[in-house]
Image (cartoon, rainbow, N blue to C red; front, side):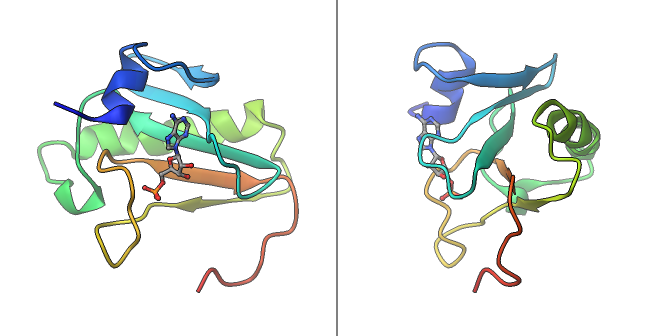
Length: 112
Ligand code: AMP
């Protein structure tokens, strides 16, 4: 499968790691939109949040349990934002489920 984030998980494309475990990989976004901008992805390929099911919900719970650890590692004790874009209208450019963790400053109140 020609998926850039699968290649990052496999180490075929370099990335700057922040956190990793059996199910999750987190790394710095190549084009940061905030002082801290980390992408949190499942190691297995799930196309988007629209492909979350009862069968893979445990993995999603694990991702959300990892996010506070990632925030702590990044020093985001004052808060942060978690975003996932879905599909064409959501402007999802990489079709491998990922959560943007953004922080390091007071973020704009809305993103639209
Ligand atoms: P989205 O537009 O929600 O699909 O987000 C995709 C994100 O992946 C964007 O913020 C890109 O900057 C980021 N991105 C794309 N390629 C890479 C890469 N090789 N390493 C790190 N981040 C990347």
